[in-house]
Amino acid sequence: MTTKQTLPNSTAVLVLGICSIVFGCFFVGLILGIVGINMAGKGRKMYRDNPELYDGYGSLNAGWIMSIIGTILGGLYTIYWIIIVAILGGAGISILNGMH
Image (cartoon, rainbow, N blue to C red; front, side):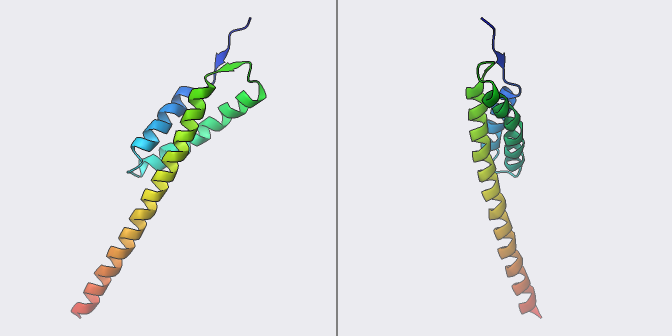
């Protein structure tokens, strides 16, 4: 019986996925999520090619899913701030135009 290797970066992807959700309310959550998704891609392909050789797919998959969720949360947060800045910028311009 051969011993199974742990998938490369499975723990790192899990940590990145958790951090992307925790820091989703900051812009860093978006970046961590994207990095986690990219790192998980290689491991997922390796596991699909030879599932009998690798262990740790559960953590890799959980990290991948959490990275997707963190990316979505970070993206929504970024869109939210773009809208807020646009509204406040428009209000500021209106106030300045009213003063003249």
